[in-house]
Image (cartoon, rainbow, N blue to C red; front, side, top):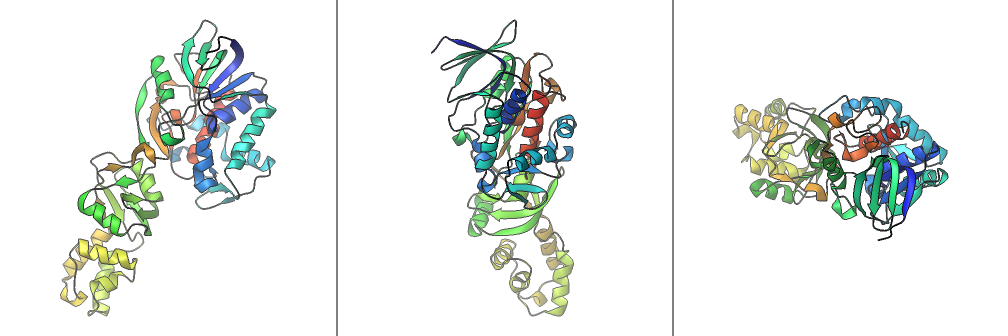
Length: 396
């Protein structure tokens, strides 16, 4: 390992969304910035997001779109750097984008454009990059911090941890940020996978496997949240936007309620169908409103066979109520392997909401996913990355 020591104003560890924007903003304000990452291919979460088109923000982003033990923590940063501030940056680089739905903004072309834009901003701000260098240790000094990497030692007045969470380890996710927080005695809210498909065992797993690839509009809810978006059956269980959303509010051992016909009182509808078409088979009737495969499997699951005329109204009503409130109990999730985000992280009690600085360690900052702030699906997590990065960089 080389023994030379380089002095900077700011050291940023982690060249993902938050780290890149923070580096560019700090450098643009005249700070000498070192940006360190253990991988040579940086910002992989940006690259793979949005199916390769990067859902880079959401125009409706506000505090209600985030999960944190302190729901008010995000307000200061989000108000100081709004979705429109990032849209202005994207527009300056003439990156074409579109709104897909629910305020979600995507690049027309490629997520690589966002990475290239942030890298260009860093170059313009004279940020010095040290990619492919694993950080071996961090120490507090009288004047600031010393960071020892594989090939270089760094000194700076300020140290920013932008290393993200544990989700998708194959692209480089590690628990490094939590280790640094613990080193400085900062409380950690236990991390867990968020925005992740849910898995099942036994009969429910078989049910999902038989419908693998089928997608329907559905509302999912528990006693803490509800989401009405797409539901996708998979070989392992359930996925799709509504499942990913509710997974962030799901605790092991709990059930999740699935409404397969959110706009319809299915109990009343089935009884009405009986009055109008008594000889119709229940499966045929249900297939008028749900995909045929799903209708058939639901009837088999609930042992519903025969003509409507041969079924008591109470039986049809119970079946309809099940369709509007199907209780399913996941055995777990697919975990960090496929999770889009990590719930939990450095407790917001430990940080200033104004600048992301650790209250007990002057000069130490945590931004982005490493903090106990998790956004809903649809660009909110990127907006938190931009906003928290800006909050730190503008208060150095």
